[in-house]
Structure formats: C-alpha cells, structure tokens
Amino acid sequence: MLIRKGAEASIFLEEWHGRQVVMKTRLPKAYRVDRLDSSIRLARTSREAHLLHDSKRAGVPTPTVYEVDTATSTIIMDYVNGPRLKEAFFGMDDSNLTRTCGLVGSLVGRLHSGGIVHGDLTTSNMILRDEEKLFFIDFGLSGYSSEPEARGVDLLLMSRAFKSTHFTLHSRAFKAVLDGYRLVIGRKDTECVLTKMHEIEKRGRYSERTQTSLVPNI
Amino acid sequence: MPSLILGIESTAHTFGASVATSEGHILSDVKRVYIPVAGRGIHPREAAHHHSSIADVVIRGALRDAEIEAKGIDGVAIALGPGLGPTLRIGATIARAIASKLRIPLIPVHHAIGHIEIGSLTTGSRDPLVVLLSGGHTTIAAFASRRWRIYGETEDITLGNLLDMFARSAGLASPGGPVIEQLAAKSTNFIELPYTVKGNDVSYSGLLTAVTKLLDTGTPIEDLCYSVQEVSFSMLAEAVERSLAHTEKKEVLLVGGVASNSALRKKLEVVADEHSAAFHAVDKKFAGDCGAQISWTGTLAFGCRLFLDIERSQVRPRWRLDEVEIPWR
Image (cartoon, rainbow over all chains, first blue to last red; front, side, top):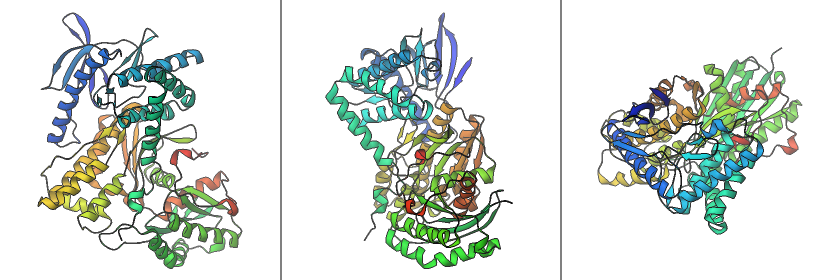
C-alpha cells in the first residue's frame, strides 16, 4: 500500500516475513536522461542502506534495513510509526519544543561526531515515535565527512527548514538545536561549523550578480 | 478610477519602462538591452552608461505606447534592487526626478518580487511554489504570513550565471542561454558531469568547472551544451520536486529570464504533473527583465500606499527576497 509519495521515492507499507515493513523504491524520473537517472538511483540506494546502518553505530536511531535490491533501487526497512517532526510540532508546548529541538541537535551532533553528514536535514526527515524517540530517515544525500563545509551545509539546511516551514519558531527552535549540538560536539567545533555555515550562506546569498560575474574580463 | 503607474527597471543589462493599471492591464512595455562585447561579461559602468544614454527614449516610448501624458501618472515604481549598483542608480535617479517633478509618490519595488507578480498576473497562479530563475536568482520560494519563504536556492552561482559563463568561455554569443539551448537541441549524446543537490539546494560551480575543462578536448560543443543543460536542469528539477513534496503546494510557477528555455519548462512540467500540481510559466514576453514587472508590482504596492521618501530611496544592491514584507497577498 502506497503511504507516501516523496520527492525521491515512493514509500509502501508492506508485510514481509510476518513483519510490518516499509518498502522504499526510487522510481525512475522521467525528467532525467536514463544514464544519469539510473546512476543516481543506484548510488543513492546503496549509500542510504549503508548510512542507515552506520548511523546507528553513531548513536542515532534509524529504521533497521532488512533487504536492499539495487536492481529496482528498493530498500526494505523497519516501519517506524509516528508523525514526522513537521507535524509533531503542532500543538507542542514551549518546554516540549525546546526539549525536542535539543534532541534534534544532539542527534545531528552524534552523526557528525561519527563522521557522517545527513545532507538533507528537514523536519520531514525525522519521525517522532511515542513522543520521545526521534528517528532520522532519508539518507539518500548523506555521506562520510568530517569537514566543516559538509557539516555547515547540514546546519544550514536545518536552519532553512525552520525559517521556511516553521518561521514562527525559527529563532527559538534553532537555538535549542544548537544547544543540543554543542553539548555533543563541543563549543569550539560548533563555532567552527557555524562560521562555515554563515560563509556558505553568503556565497549564494543574496546573489543578484555574485562577485564572479561582477568582475569584468578586462 | 484605476491608478496608472510608471515602472522603471535597471537592475542589470536591461533598461525598461512600462505603464500598468491597477486593474492588471500592461499598457506598454519598452526596453533596451546592453550587450557586452562577445566573450565578456556585463561591465557595470558601461551598462550604466548605456542605460543613461537611452533612458529618455525608453521612458517616452512607454508613455507614448500607453497613450498617456506624463501628468496622467499616479506614481513611479522603481526597482531599487537587488542588482548592480551603477545601473540601479541610473534608474533610481530618473525615478526620483520624475516623482519630484510631477509631485507623485515614489514606490520601491524588489526586482524578484516583480518577476513573481508579473508571472502571477499573466498565468492566474494564486498560491504557487515559485521557481525564480533570473541572472541573479536561482530560488525556490512559497508565500506564507506576509513574506516569501525560501525553500531552496543555489549555494554558489545561479543557473543563469552557469549558462552565461559557460557560453562566454566557449566563445558563444551573449546572452548564453538561448544559444546553448539551440546547440543542445542538436545533440542527444550525454556526457557525465558532476550532479550536486544538497537538500533542496543546488550547487553549480563544480559543474561549471568540469564542463569548461572539456572545452579544449575536442568534444563537440553540441554535446557539451546538451549535457550541461541536462545536468543543471535535472538538478533544479530535483530541488523543485523536493520542495514540492515538502510544501505540498498545488501549483508551480516558473518565472525569470531562464524560464523561456523550453527544455527546462518540459522538465518542471513533468515534476509538477508527478505531484498533481498545475504548472505555470510566465509568458515569454515578460520572462526576461522588463519594465512591466516593476509597473505592475508598483500598482500593487501603490494600492497599499507603500511609498518612499526620496531622501530614503537609496538603491539596495543586495536586497534579499525574504526580507520584504508584502501586504497585498
């Protein structure tokens, strides 16, 4: 049964050896030429399977992977029942919000300490189970890196998600995320990643004519 | 009585003037475009010189086409940014002079909001996920609580920059986009190039470096144009699809100069279809920078009495889209 049609993949709820599982299939994209499309789907499927697993080692809850089929770009994994963080935010009181965002930050911190970057941190990619355990999903754009640049992108995407989707909460929520992150990663590394984040932000921003195109070729 | 607004655009290559009514009629739209020497980028001072030399002809043309006299105008809308300082100042100086001479309000307009509003006017789109592709923007945004909220954008150069800079390195005519599109249509030979999507963001600088390096290898230019379009457009299509899945909007609105590219339109149409969203693209006539985007947005701002004292009307070269409060939506 199709339960969600995401941007990258379709999510089916199925029964597999007596277990309720999620089948995540990366269907071909008609807007990409075949060669490009199949290499992207293959790379992301295998990367996601690896990183779902390795994130557990870093101390971040993720669905358990049962089976990977690269021919159809499909991963069969545990079904995590709960609202996405995007929905769970509604109706949360202040202290609960701060606590949950702190948890988000500490989990991002654990990923980063473990040498992993998620690459697509939004409130759609986190599931809250039983109102307290947070699972990270959607590791298709993730990778192994301890570079401040890659970590900075992670935090920038997180900040953007709050700014666009949860604009009334942005400053409070993102502060709580950083507090949680700092506790895991430490003050010094956090500052370093934040500096990088602002630098990345400025590169594209505002960008009506960036420096590169301002310089006349004389 | 509908109000009549004169709009002036001078953020970059284009000097444009237009008269629009508050009922949504574009009565005139006249422009002249500065073309840099082949193989070179825009030179801000030369562009400003170009604008100042043709400004009176363009503005007179806009009034004549609209069949009104200067004293019939209710306000002057000016694109104060973002853009190039020197060209912005030409438009701003003229707009201030007209406003003060005719004793009518000066209305500040954000250039990107101009693209979005002219797109909305000509397509009837109401609550879209906006894909804004101009020389200076590669931005995916949606409106909520008086502001455009940004869901995705480029993390370095824009799609327009990528195409322009590649065209320039290849010695193609300026602007690069249309020439690349024509050459690309002659090939289906795909060459692998770096594909970089980060969340809902894209990054084009690696792609530019890689495709520029291939220029000297004897690879047919048609294949390079085809491949650079395929990769850059697919990256954007993916970022749009991600934003669409996240925002669950039911419309996609493509605006800005790069919106004229048919290959790109097709890709975004596929994405919109896939998520049961209606696809709209701005009329090609108003896709590139033009006075109409400023005059029409000016009427909306005029209706909300968003006026600016001349003393406070300095240009804003780096004005952010998400900084602007919008009372009319």
